[in-house]
Image (cartoon, rainbow, N blue to C red; front, top):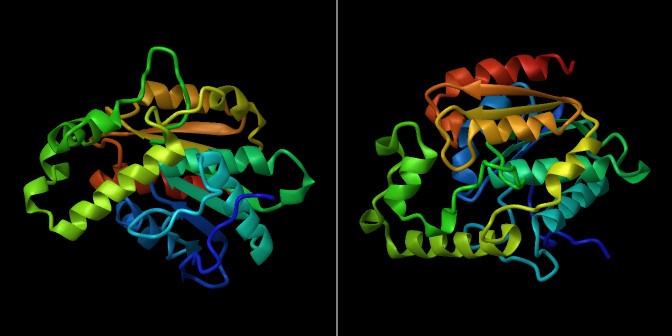
Length: 259
């Protein structure tokens, strides 16, 4: 039996109801980290913006134990809902999930027509020689801000200022991420499997990303036959937060060419 989302799981649609669908997948920081993407895409898409199981206090089902499991569960949900021609936009771990969705959708006729395109924003997941993924779980708040942001002062969140509830959610999110992505946040088989992706794919990386570098992103893009690569200046791991104007300037033309 395929991994499944919880029975009460919501995709939280927003935007234009009759427009093309966009599935926006957040990274380890939770759904708030992709809020600008959701707002921007809602002007032209019916946006599906779920909170992954296990994040923000939600339960993680026993049969979801990897990024691949989560990708399978999302594909099954899209299939069951009759949702087709979906553009999947993923940030960080969400980018990894998006690539796994594309690999699986290309593997057979069962999922034919579900995916339209992929936008991978500073995605983790691959193992690239000479470009290691930063050890996220070893970073304190200051170290994370310095690795993930072009301007670390914008990204620094002082743990002393968090409420007990916020701290508990942050810790729970980290545990879920460790279960699904592993401490390395990578799968050594992913890079070779990207050759099977057969939908238009845009790979976007922040110029100052120290979690996964632009050189890492170029290697990911180079492994996908249908991809193009864009680098966002004055931005780190979350370019849609740090330099949204430059991010829209590369994403919007890509999406327009799909029509």
